[in-house]
Length: 260
Image (cartoon, rainbow, N blue to C red; front, side, top):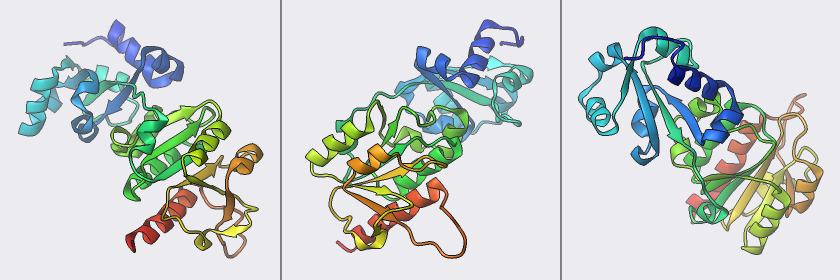
């Protein structure tokens, strides 16, 4: 059992929790909680840490999975040190990075999301969950978008991270041009959009661009898109939350596709 918070493995995990650079260099991210642990594909698991209390109260299904994946016992104090949450559930694991391509995304369906500089990890996780619920095939993000491997992003995905293909692109305009060549129509959500979002037909291959929470979609990305859409708003509201706007657009596409 690891019982010292100065243990090298503990220090390594704390670094992975707090530094995106460390995660990138090792190609590992951290997942916490029994539900998320149970959803991680076994082949992606690097290592698992549990407390004695967790082990004592684990159900048969959890025990069977632990027997398959292996685990390291740690003290309650060590788990608290390693955890990013106030009340750790007693299980934490290191998971290997995903390595998807645009082809992986396009092979998953005909509805896609493009994220241009989202900064809030909670928004990002919510977008992932809603994308799966609405039937999206994958998500393409700019390098300026917050890391999906941020602990808060991971928790917000509620497991969708393990099922939704995604990539970070160096140049969104190049990716958009590639999508358009492949027959995907690209629609940017824009405060000054010229087209009401309900006026378009999304039953064919479609991608929605959602911009930064403050600045919106960049001019270059908006210009590369086929159309700029607006979502009508009442009162004095200036804009919708990025995750809410993504949800509105994806579910309009979902509604249209249900009638096919």
